[in-house]
Length: 142
Image 1: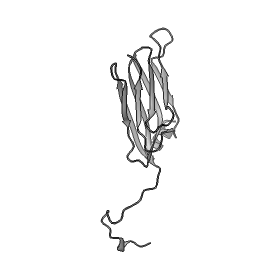
Image 2 (image 1 turned 90 degrees about the vertical axis):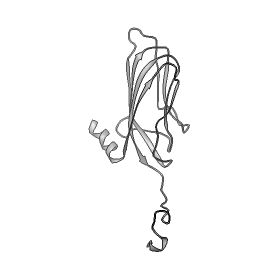
Image 3 (image 1 turned 45 degrees about the horizontal axis):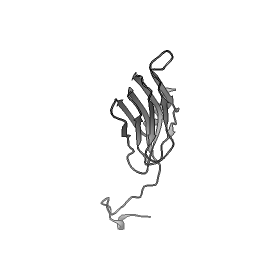
Image 4 (image 1 turned 135 degrees about the vertical axis):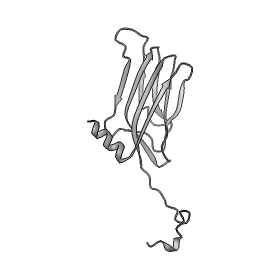
């Protein structure tokens, strides 16, 4: 199955972020940013490794007003509380709003490391300004 993930990452542009989530910093903006407003990010996998448990909510969102990508509500340390949480969206991945950045936040004093991986691809049409590219319009055949 890993080959399927890599196929999408190689066919498009691989994106990855490792976020150290610390006490005192609630928001981490633009941990993954698209190349342009016409690119769309697809999240394939998110892994949250908790090092200090707290009554905390960890959220992965996009800043394009799309729905949350992943949310984990952590409990105080105790029996049965997971220390590693993984969201696997498959090889195609979960799309983020076109042109939007991926943001991470948490609500309390927990400490964790979050690993996010996926790819981005060009979604919208791109206009080529021929005059600005050094090609005079008179040399373009249509």
